[in-house]
Length: 235
Image 1 (spheres, rainbow, N blue to C red):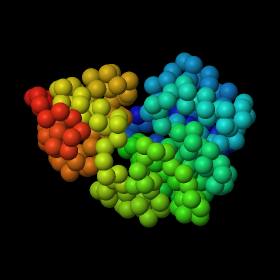
Image 2: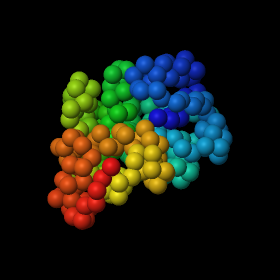
Image 3: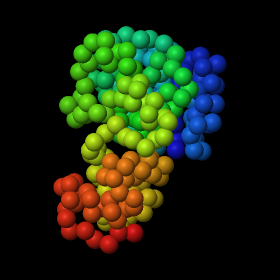
Image 4: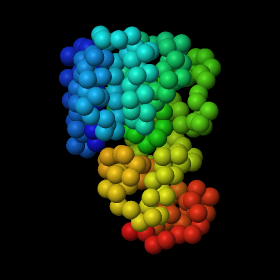
């Protein structure tokens, strides 16, 4: 799993790097300390599974910077981790397409849980901001995608529940690829993802469909109308 992390405070950046290495499976981490660094990195490589960035950093104003990042890699989820805790700024980041907004005061456990939630196709909004005022969420996201603190605590405890009730568009694409008999590596190549991201999505797909293997996932997805009921042999 390849993750770009950015913060202009070296101590926090090193701390976040340590947390990710300790809690994620073999993450490949690329670090940046400014928006200028981020843009330079993205000009050379765009195969990231996730971007985690501070909000206010040197090199650019945060709003045009996040717009540029989203334009460069629209399929890659972006998480903001910031000391800025403002509902209007949160709303602006959601409008851009940010998938998560984590306060820097969050515990290590919550940070990792929020990251896993975003990688699984969900979104994380701090409980205090989500319920202190009405937040306008993207039209293609159901309310279940937004996990307040209680939901995240459950997610962290046993990872047995997912906050979404249906498959995302990306996960439907992956189910279709599975139905074509493609391996994880082939799916990753076809959809311009990494194998790590594909594996995360498949884990969530099995949970959402309440099945135990790929073949059963194809059958259940067909029953629910996600894919055609003409099911080929699956690998």
